[in-house]
Length: 166
Image: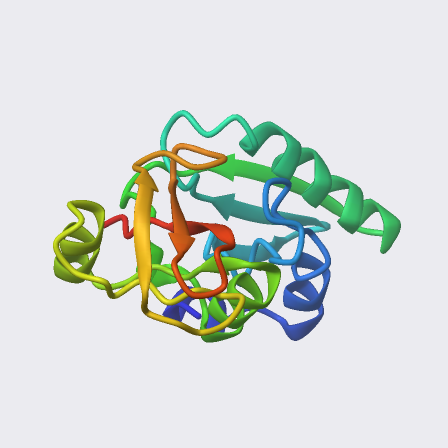
């Protein structure tokens, strides 16, 4: 959780945690690291969000879902898209990384390790199904542009790996 979020009223955070990432529904937008800041200004909750990449088509849905979540709790909300600093996989919380793996998506490695894995140089992406490192890159693009497709050579299951973005 970023320093900005540490200063947000707990009720606001709890409401934001009810908003799921539309592409990975087991992750809240808080665990995904998309929420940059939120504050109460008069009677409106102002929420700043950063897309996982600048062309992310889910941001309109996320913004609408934020407004809806606050409306359901008797509050008004305004959403602002913030592009700088750019989102990084470092912003995914520890809980978010666990949720990714439980959902069947390997969580991002460090930038250097990510390059080695995506070039096929090292077997370091852990299969979220069986935990094996005996995995191989199938395609640098998975179900979305931010994921790569891997396959486990032990359990033979295909899975997405969430690419490291810095």
